[in-house]
Amino acid sequence: MILMLYTFFILNQFEVLSLPLWILAWTFLIIGLIALTILIVYTKYGREISIKLSIIAVIIAAAFLGFATHFFLLNFGI
Image (spheres, rainbow, N blue to C red):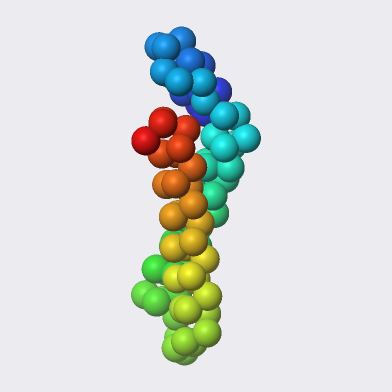
């Protein structure tokens, strides 16, 4: 799917996409969504409240989702 999107943007005469940034963007997006899912599941079903785990999950999710958004915008020339 990622390769199909990559070739779609190249064939439609967008700017040339950077393949390493494209791969990093998808990787960071997946890691960020996993961290966010862990945070949501932990806060909903967690038996004991752990401030450290919550802070770590929020920081990881925010950092990876922020970098993923940044890399996607760089790829699209925005």
